Length: 427
Image (cartoon, rainbow, N blue to C red; front, side, top):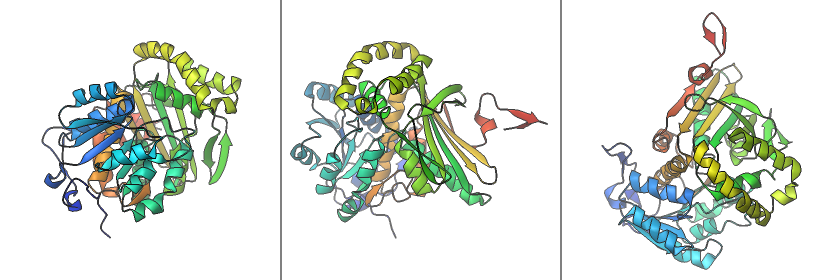
């Protein structure tokens, strides 16, 4: 069955969104002629993540019309000045359905980057997108919110709109990396995927500001869900530390368990029986601080958004000062082990999280606009969300500017200090 394409409100035909070509200019995407008037609304567009997404879209596809959505007109006007003539500002309140539906009436796709998503009580933006028949992408990193969004699958399909949840960098690009590792392993037909592990590292806040800081604190209040041999297990947040080699540009870093949505979605969709996710930061004492918070503060305290915002106001000046020293390098390592002993690794490393998160979200936007996603609500690793044949170009676009991007390699080929077991054999 042919994949359903995004219904264009601003163009004469949905058939305009066939797979686009990559322009001769590196990284540039040439949208088909009939689709060049497509309008993309970026909610949270005056923030670090949304602003980075808008900038990446303007560089990858200058023909797109980008609407920056937010509450602060002064910040919005500043972003529009940076983006140039194909942009505009829309004053939008994501908690007000009337405001949302008014903003979505004349756009073809909405990007929801107005986090944090933890403790959110509804999916207002997705519901407004369904009501106005607008394609949808969010950069959610919260398990409860992601699966609440997924529950709107039938309504989105009935409205004939494509929607992707958790479509940022991690989760998002990391899900697609995992899906490609699993696909390659099954194609080789030598063993069944058995263990899938996500490892993430970000220096400081990655330059992404107070929203990322709030997200981190809120995640510390969530019990970690992981899977072991097909059984769901629950673990203490920021426990289970491991020292992981992220390869060139990062080296070995300590990472700790966190409750992230790609664990459940990968387990259920990719069918891997053992799945977990770990995260670490720098300088090293931030890891100590995160661990101390889980021991000193109750889960109820860390799940209270108002109290977490107070913590953010307290710590943000210090974090920003140290960010200037720590930098904002980001790295993702995805490991897949199979029953035949096969061990494959994918690594994605960039010098600046605040840039790479934008290219990652932009890559999902372009995939939806090009018709790579069927009507419904999907996770990135679902072939109905991002078609298998579209994954390679999505990863290529998302990895713009990376200092290390490898897929489906044995650990000894990517680690800085592989272990030799003898006779020149590395593991």
